[in-house]
Length: 365
Image 1 (tube, rainbow, N blue to C red):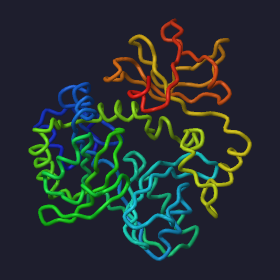
Image 2 (image 1 turned 90 degrees about the horizontal axis):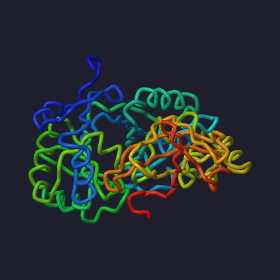
Image 3 (image 1 turned 60 degrees about the vertical axis):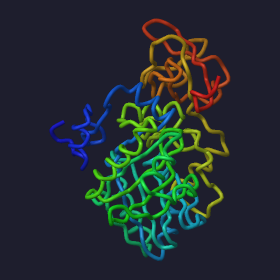
């Protein structure tokens, strides 16, 4: 804890009663009231998250689009200005280095958001590949120049309209715009990590607390509450969204993670293309699946998944209690051929069936 970094709004969170935990090298608010209350607020109204621990890079230059297209499995060059593109970034063997979002600003200017715990690793990878391929591109780590506030939930748009961001009414999902607040340039994206409508706002630290206070002021009548990492994790797992180090890792490919839609094998080239093409053609050996459980016991990470014969066919990747379903949910990676057969976990001697379901889990069955 003593070595954890603090987000610029640390004192703001402490004043509002946050409980802190170390996460990704940062001292982060995990909850303010209860994870249950915060989770339900996002599903029914809105929540305000501080995710300023995330890393940000700029990628600029004549070869910027070409460079990012080579690093990422998704299409970057074909994206229009103003588009946000989600994509895994792979090693040559197809394992995932990180999953990130690229914001195209112009043909030669891109803004990239990466996971906090991978920021240094990703930046080194970007620099290494730029030197290797000799692209005319300039890469800058601008993480210290931004706070990142996320307003998530069905009332998010109405709240930001009242704050004064009129342009969000016409902003489509996974698009972004530049705006201004308190004399400073900010970037608003209609993206998120909860399975709900919402926005992420990149702003200079100097205006972050003022912005957070205004969102709270205008959001409170709509039911908005401050939310921490606890609700963020339960929300994303209900929605079936991956967390790096769990559903994605250097040992799990995007195809195995069931993120086939992000992998553009028709692109001329990208790092990992050969390995992913071979995997797609020969048969994807494992798949990430999502499940529900009867009872109250949560299947935690690394719990073995077994078939009817007691043979281990995979393991749990994430597990938590769904506040909406009031039952345990989770994700697991299992052998592909076992997906259509009964699967179980052994919890303290009790063999409990996995009820496989397609996300969002809180809206199925």
